Image (cartoon, rainbow, N blue to C red; front, side, top):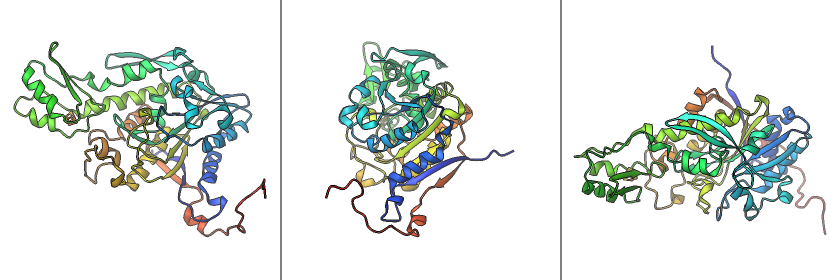
Amino acid sequence: MTSDPSIVYFGSVQHGNRAKFASFAVKVDEVVMKLDLSTIEKKDKVAIKMHLGFQDGYQTIPVFFVRRIVEAVKKTGAYPFITDNPTSVYNAVNRGYTQETCGCPLIPFAGVKDKYIYESKVNFHGLKSLDMGGVLHDADVLIDLSHVKGHNTSAFGGAIKNIALGGFSGPSRWNKIHGIEGSIPYWDANKCTPEHAKKLVKACKDGYISYNEEKHELTLSFGMCHQCLDCIEVDRDVECLTLRPENYALFQELMAINANNILKTFDDDKKFFINFAISITPYCDCWGIAQPNVVNDIGVLGSRDIVAVETASLDLIAKEGLIEKMVPPFFRLHNDPGLHPFQQLHGPMKSPYIVLQYAEKLGMGSQKYKLIELLSPEKTMKMKPPKGVSESEPTFF
Ligand code: SF4
């Protein structure tokens, strides 16, 4: 028995007509309308989970679109609020997000001290539980509103990452989720002398291997490692270091578990996923830096299926490819056309699809999808434009 593919609605940034009806803004509204917010009930508390960014980063979802989505939710009679970690909420004004501009309150998902939390059991490679944001947990409806971009550890950040990391307190994110990759042993201390360990440190030109001589402890930053294998070359005669795909995959498997734990707190008809594949940067918004866009703007995708919306986003990015001249010179690109653009950036062992395989296994959704493009350029090209109006109501001249 084959199941039907999940529907993913898509609006391209490309338009086929110099008219309002064909513009990207209208396509965003169309995607939201097709998602059918009517399953949201009056007075429901609607968490619009975003990454509001940090410090000097500006490539988050423009408030212009956020406000339109907030207004659409308000029409259902429900109460939307935007939520993210306390730091991002506190500094959100720097990126233009305020109650006045967004049209609804901005509330930290785990309280002002990041301590309003629920225990979320994971039991994964020695990690028993994580702290889920209490405000997010208490909401009736989830709108997972994500900016699609690259990510150094998982290669890709979208709807799953927005809740899998972005739904948990700071100590959970930074001290427990990040670093899980090292929980499968990868270095044999008995085979390695301090001299050899120092050679390995030197072999990694980017500084992702460190060595504590006093404790005779070597640490590799899987989160940053891009698998150039220079260290493995230096280790050829000793073989104390092993870089297995399994280590890199642990982060993505844990992401799937975390996202699933959050999704389980919402009814099936109260979960919506909207991905903005624009301003696609190599690293995540957490870095808090302005970055070059390494893939052309693509558009907006919406679905009731988190796995489908992520798969479709990744497939569209693969089709688009990297803008190589925009890739920062410190990246050592893997120039293999068979790799996804995010693997070319972050390494072949970091396929961005890994998380989707785990998510599908957990029953979170399907990688099989049907992409329905709304107001495509081909279609809108054939539509008659209205008579030229360059300034609509109210007019001041
Ligand atoms: S594979 Fe390359 S980037 Fe990764 S730790 Fe080794 S030398 Fe560094």
